[in-house]
Image (cartoon, rainbow, N blue to C red):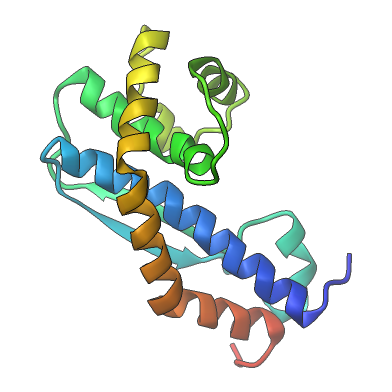
Length: 168
């Protein structure tokens, strides 16, 4: 597919917003348990001006939340792992249930890193508790996303790299 510059710009901003929601949810849930961490956003180097069509298949920007003092409590660890995927639905005002979360998990919609935090015996009541926690944190997450979208240089760098305004 051939996309206009305006479409690519909108896709990059949407990618970044979704990634920010996901990673900030990990961060805010972790913080609620006293866990300290760091979010790192990175450019997808596979997408540039020569390969701009790949934006339809891959995210232009990715992210990762790294914990510096992971909890030992199984619920807390799982809640941190599930938070990103849950928040992507909650922050976009979509209803999400424990069954939806399990379906995402079964369909491997979770990153290996996030999935590794969730024990095999995690149950629906525990997932529902995670959903409620993310819903409580939604105002903080969405406010922070708005700041990151406004202030992040990642978006502008991705736009410039993919549209060919910056030489490699």
